[in-house]
Image (cartoon, one colour):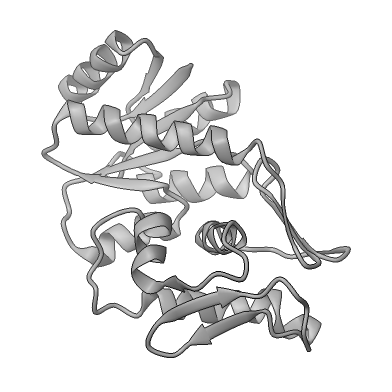
Length: 226
């Protein structure tokens, strides 16, 4: 599998490249946003390690552009910033996971393996809950024949719910599986994204499939009701 490392610190980029090659990957390295986008357009990568603070366009912009182009390889973002808001910005831009500097190479490699494995497993299976359809490989969502446009994080959230139809899932379960990092438990980010999702998959179709169980969590009903 070929990976792309995007890091402007030459020594760090070299260390990551060497470590990943020892893990058995083929690795390309880009040192700025323009070079990263060029590489991504030229090859089909199995994953990207992407630093946020690179020469323009920065990592967030690169991530958004790749997702807008329909490129859904796993993206692990690197940052020196520890604020939850900064990590949320990266994940909302379409990143799959976040790793704060300084980090151990063992953790980076483990997170990459988990992301790649999860993506490979997810892409094998199309999901259907009632008349709601989701294709992980094509990154497509439809209700009936109507295509629904979702942001990367909305897509991930819906995919998790559709893998657990008619099951009660807690906010913490959603944070653990969709946001995939230690999140501030007092945040209402899950509630916000549930609201965004409801506006797109339910309200335009006059249905009520996404239920809030007050104080407990959420449930996606398999039976269409309106």
